[in-house]
Structure formats: structure tokens, C-alpha cells
Image (cartoon, rainbow, N blue to C red; front, side, top):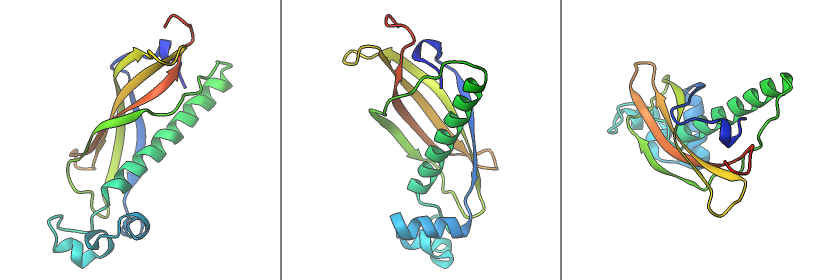
Length: 160
């Protein structure tokens, strides 16, 4: 992963895609969001969603899994080139979480992450705070998900 100093506002990463199968939707819902329209095709069809719908938390969890996997891939590639890899800190939070359209069984959502803001941390010397908006778009080109999340990112130089 990159250091705070090396990241620019507007930087874009395609982080991957996930296909929401009926089985995966039901399994996630049974454990974490057991509402009828996430558990049963007929209930989903008769709901406002019009089909078996993935939990919004499932859509966000798939995004997080892909984001972490992409970060690991980038770190591995950088290490292979002999580059120093920044070890990012935790997230101080997120805002603007939106489930824009239903994600139905069979939908494939592709996620993209764009840096929207960065600032030097006032309370953590040697760290910056990065904000990035991640969106998910289905196979029809419709945006279905968005979130703006922050992360602590170490600085390569103390002055930022």
C-alpha cells in the first residue's frame, strides 16, 4: 500500500467484482440480516425489491472483502519490486452510506474506489487521514452502492 505522501486526490482503483448468488444472499441473511425478502425468493418477489434481494450489509461486506484483497495484492506487487510498503492504520469511520438500488440474485457488482480528500492528522503525528468514496455498479451500469470511508495512512516523511 502507498504512503500518505504518495496518494493524490482523484486517484482511482478498480477493486473487483462480486456476483450475488441466491445461495450467498440467503446464507449471509440467515447469519446477519434475517429479513424475509433476503431469505425467500417468493417473499423477495412480492416485496418492493421485486426479487430475492441481498442485504445492504452483504453488499458492503463484499466491497470490504474486495478492498482488503486488492490492498494485499498491491502490497505483494510492491514488495516484489523491492518497494517499501505502508502499513495502514484503522478507519476512524465512514459517512454517506447509500444502498441506491436493490442488488438481486444473479447481479454482479463491480466496485471502484476514488480518493476524495486527504489531510494531516492533528492528533496522530506521522499520520494522515485519507477519505475515499467507493461505489458499486451492477452489470447494467446502474450504481447500487456508495460509501465514503476514512483511513489512517502513515506518512513517508514527517512533514507530510
